Amino acid sequence: MARGGAWQGLTVSALAFFGTSVFASDDLLSVPSGQPVTFQEMLWDRPGSGLVYRFRFVAPEIGQEGREYEDVEIDMHHLCETFAIPRVANTGPQPSQIVISLGQTETEFGVANADVVQFFEAYRIEGETCILEFF
View 1 (cartoon, rainbow, N blue to C red):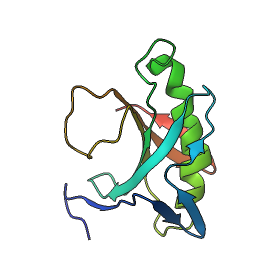
View 2: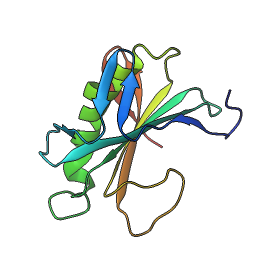
View 3: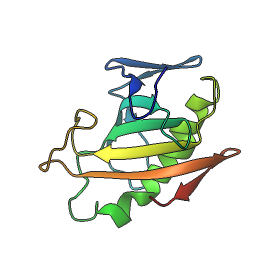
View 4: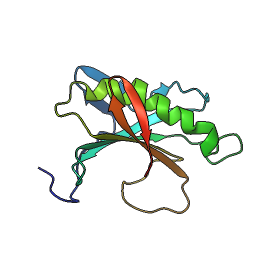
């Protein structure tokens, strides 16, 4: 059981198992911007405000012209509703928040890397909808 800021996570490099769903991490995901996106990992923790699931994706084109934050923000919302919500429905306790992150390349969680562009957003779930929460 995670306490305080300690992290416990589910990290899977080849396959991700969520409920009865199996997903190969190198499969390209469809997003509104059309950029290539793959699933990296899902982590969870229990900070002071409750259970948080973090879904991390690789999007090699982010940070380039036409792939700035404003261009791909819709992709993060889409991934929250079409990828994250279906996978948390059968995982047990429901999260108080889902965080979606896009990184240019795979990175180790919690390790700063100034050479890699990363975007992230936090959402709360209402039914089958992700509602943006501001940090």
